[in-house]
Length: 364
Ligand SMILES: Nc1ncnc2c1ncn2[C@@H]1O[C@H](COP(=O)(O)OP(=O)(O)O)[C@@H](O)[C@H]1O
Ligand SMILES: [Mg+2]
Image (cartoon, rainbow, N blue to C red; front, side):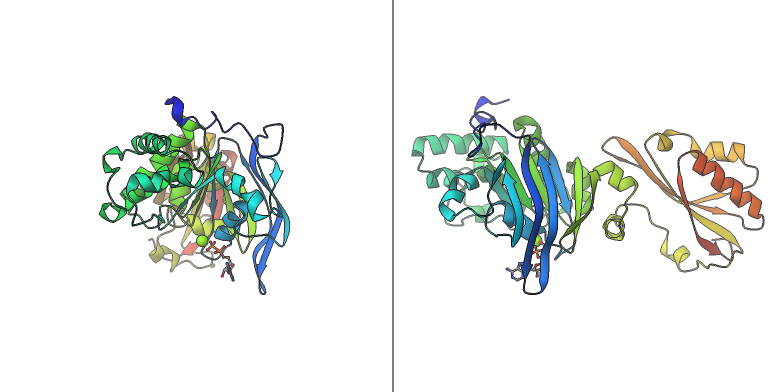
């Protein structure tokens, strides 16, 4: 690891406190209202040192307001914002200045200065700090090497691709050796392949520098590929949080389920439209397994243990943070209620979650 890039080298001086707290961010009952709309409605959350925490929510959920409260661009109506142990929500502009240097930020639309070269953009935070030119250029070169863009140092942003612009944005955000990197929809304007490369870079930086990252997105795929923990925000409230794999395996809230909809198996629409509540025809089962339960030969064991047939309609096992997380849809003949009961009992005994979604009259 490059000595110069160590986030801990001169980052070990927290503002105004003598001890180094393990929570980089702690929010307590944060509220912010615009007119009658509460943008934040009592958010409590911590971001631990060195982790990547993802916050996911739909448009208008309060994500950007939350991030703006962290760097003092927005003041909460009530509640507290602790950055490295120091409460900042009532600080004046002058006191906020050193704090803002502790926080780097990247944006959906990159926010680069088009009249400045790539290296000038990267060095800008250091220029604002009044650092000498030679030091600024040296640091810019280090950072451009880190993000793989050294050969673009003298180029202008207009000549770069979206992914390259975001790499410059990341380099600039790291210039002042922040303790925390905030990312507000930083990959939302990028194609899937470029998104993957930017997320891989952020993960690398997290590992190499131990940099704490708070990443905000409306895309579950982004959370899945980079975050270890996730918090789901809806209408200004944290409705659910936990390790990413466990939220994927067992989403508690309807909003989380709907955010997962695009990347977790769903009952095919043509079967969904034929589901009825009358208990005749085939029963359609949804089976969710995770962890140990997903490592077993569940279906072959079911076939061996319970006489009578069943059919796999759709589904599969996925891997999230090295944990298997699976959803299977089965059709079970409905002419023998005991058979269905035995199938469900067997699956539950294997720690699967089982739900009878309904019945379809004719085989699907
Ligand atoms: N400066 C503002 N003035 C008025 N309403 C705002 C302002 N900023 C945000 N809001 C409202 O607060 C809610 C949350 O917005 P925002 O934090 O931008 O959500 P997100 O980033 O999740 O899309 C929305 O209803 C939005 O319209
Ligand atoms: Mg936003």
